[in-house]
Amino acid sequence: MPYSNTGHEVLIVVFQVRHFSDTSNTPRDAPELGVLLWQRALDPQAGTWSLPGGRLRDDEDLTSSARRQLAEKVDVREVAHLEQLSVFSAPDRVPGARTIASTYLGLVPITSDPQLPDDTTWHPVADLPEMSFDHRIMVANAHARLAAKLSYTNIAYALTPSEFSMSTLREIYCAALGYQVDATNLQRVLARREVLTRTGTTAPSGKSGGRPPALYRFTDSRLRVTDEFAALRPPG
Amino acid sequence: MPYSNTGHEVLIVVFQVRHFSDTSNTPRDAPELGVLLWQRALDPQAGTWSLPGGRLRDDEDLTSSARRQLAEKVDVREVAHLEQLSVFSAPDRVPGARTIASTYLGLVPITSDPQLPDDTTWHPVADLPEMSFDHRIMVANAHARLAAKLSYTNIAYALTPSEFSMSTLREIYCAALGYQVDATNLQRVLARREVLTRTGTTAPSGKSGGRPPALYRFTDSRLRVTDEFAALRPPG
Image (cartoon, rainbow over all chains, first blue to last red; front, top):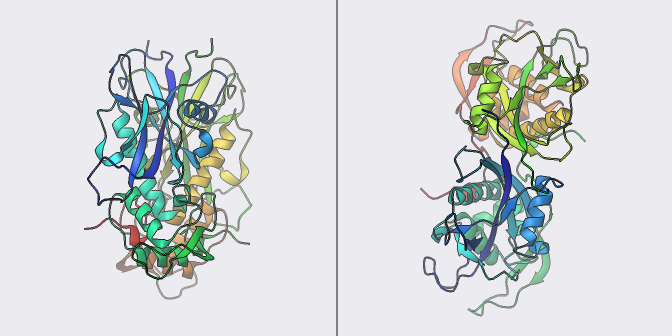
């Protein structure tokens, strides 16, 4: 029969820019982009690492399910942004009965340090362990979405502290993108688009004892497209 | 049992900017954004209008299913852009067994005039007929995505002729967005972002007999983000 019923699961790619003390693929003390994974104790694929999530229940929609399942791994109050990503629907993506997966992107600010269950930990996105099923491509897909949105929205607000110096912001952008960006250019483009607001205060002096850096915050703490064509804005 | 199996359907929101001779909510001859709908002959909700699509088969993924089901309504070679949109998963969104819907956005160039089955026709998005189930909100969701992408990508290439004057391009943007945009601003911003290329030729003179307008084409005919932060481009 070509139209069997299928199962539906929700999987959440939770990213946080954080310090990994035990990795060495970035300069000492530089933060990296991490993803939240749990290790499967049972087959199929016991020992591999999976995204948090699970089956959709009869009485919930996908977003309710994502929040419920995330809550089993991490305090969801720590998640500053949650959005639907993609659907993974290859007929043979998991063994056994067909299961379609909807993925979500979740972002946790660098200042959060959520309690985690014993089977769950953060892994650097640049150095993933052996992943379950198609979960590695889901992480890559989510990372591509995050990188794209960093370039045309204010989504970085969900990764940063509430107030930050430009050098901290630059570190977070570099970690989230996976390559170096120039702090002067970053500040100029974000200022021109009115994405950042100066708080009027300064941070304690840096390690080098120089002039105390100015602090900034994101003007909005809701997602918006920051660089829409001005010519295309709706009237009024 | 809280985890029953569910059905999964794919629904495609196909937009075309086109001339509707029998509507009068825009100036005479101005094109409008249309959406492809078919009228249900049978219950549930006989007589209401639905998006093209249907159930996911066991042997196909969502994108294959979208192309297959679209082919039943319209020659898919006429669809210049197809992308996954959202998942509609409210437990009671349709009567009977639970069915989750994945929606796609499809775009047809203004120059296409595809053959349609008898039950299928284009409707102005601004004047929809009585819609089935949650299909009206799916159209609104797709329209919002199209409007957003018009403002930060080159997606309009999938709505235009291969070559066009600025006044034709402006008409298409106005129709797709649902409000007026200024041709001079539009040309300036698209030129600065290198979205448009002059063909070096001109159109036949306009009705008013003035200077023949220059013709343009989209530089790329694949979707790209046109206004990413220059500061955030990957190296190399």
